[in-house]
Image 1: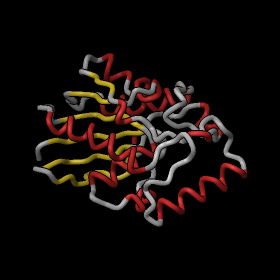
Image 2 (image 1 turned 90 degrees about the vertical axis):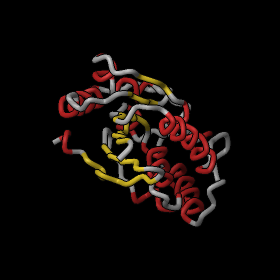
Image 3 (image 1 turned 30 degrees about the horizontal axis):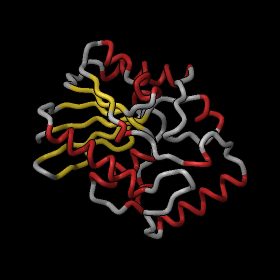
Length: 202
């Protein structure tokens, strides 16, 4: 094994709780529940000797791994890890209109139309292109044990890319707030070592 990546989703925000659409263009803070989830994750994994922490540019990821950053682990923001941009739907409530629009776009993605996107937003192909740049950067670096904090939809796409699965299967990777996926890299092959681990929340 050449590298081991602990990939987690950020903790809860008020917009998560309220069902508001929250993408790349919404830079919200963790709420009390999210900060508690982050503290629970840190309590369990603080002794893992991470060599590097990568987050998206969005503050909810920085806050989720704050304990590790404050402990002195080198930290780098990568915009390639940002959430998918939902365009005109960002900041909108998850009402009947949003549900219908999201159902339509999910059906397009599941049928293999990975260029489909909302107005002003990003397509899965665009997200994977920037995720790939960040993965290539991480692969090129010397650090072997790495913590990555990112976002639910982008994480699903990242896991499809790493596991060489079609993006139509992104729904196979569930994600609660601070869910952990552990991924191992040997040569050029990624394997999944832990799936949707939320033991730290029990």
